[in-house]
Image (cartoon, rainbow, N blue to C red; front, side):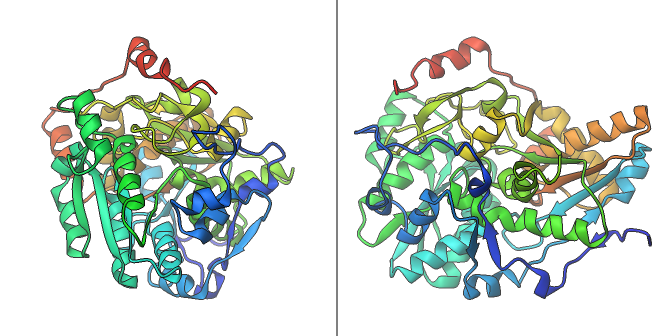
Length: 454
């Protein structure tokens, strides 16, 4: 076989024309989301009051394996997809490892991340339904940036509630959103009832995704012609993000490469779930076996230290209940945590896969994450997003293990995007001002003890 190229590109006609729904192959499905008032599974009618109707249908469908990608979305995808699967030859040389390292690069669009894959889909369905606009939250700002682009494309109003600490630390990403026409509000704000309540309960809070979700949902249901959209966690989002894994799998197959290990960063689950879905599908069908690793920050360790239980998806407790690995909806990560991945829970799909031991999880400290990011940037020529760098950290660790054992493993990880809007965090790391914060058991107990009784 000829040498594997640095970049494996699929042809335009090889881009997936369907999204893959991994739930269809799961014998034990993720638990249903519940109406917090009745504690019964939410109905399509109830969910359609919050989400676009077509997205609500996708959210509740756990039997349809493939969903056709509408032509208008495929045409938009062609501006930046298929994205490359890159062989990290320079990193391999730097580490002096026999491992073969590949990364699926999702940063080759203006939003700088994988989030655009779902943003354009959600904006499309909102426009098709005849809505005026959408509301959302954003943490590090990647989702808000992607959604503002998508809404601009479809001429929709876009209202973004941005976690306050990120709003202050990442002004340039905020300004990209505004350039695309979005209204950006630091959360928790005084603009909503739930925002005022959270500010009163947690004076001086720097915010969390759970807070911002509560505000965005309230804003959506209180305005006629608006719906709420979310950039992670939900089944519909993992469905749209499956294009990542489908392309990665197709690129590997093109050169007869079998992945041994698939690694992704894990906050709410969108990138991880999208990357691993087709690989997990093969495992569920008994066709192959993979070592799949979810990597999360030590300062927000929902999988590795959370509990598997029903919890509110938001801090204000206005959203449905989801069964997931959670730290409690009241958990707010330390303000010095700079790497995104700030959500208190984990996708119900990822949580169920983890509970079934189909995937494993690790938590890593942020100084080691930025050390890995620096190593990667210096040899691979891309400044990685802090979120992605969690996966880079573990990919490097595993490659170094191969150096010790002499194994030639094929390691695949997701490079969710670039870090060029994250320079405040990089500055703190370079200046030696970045520290690691790991919540104590007592810190976690405070929020976990307040889980709803279901």
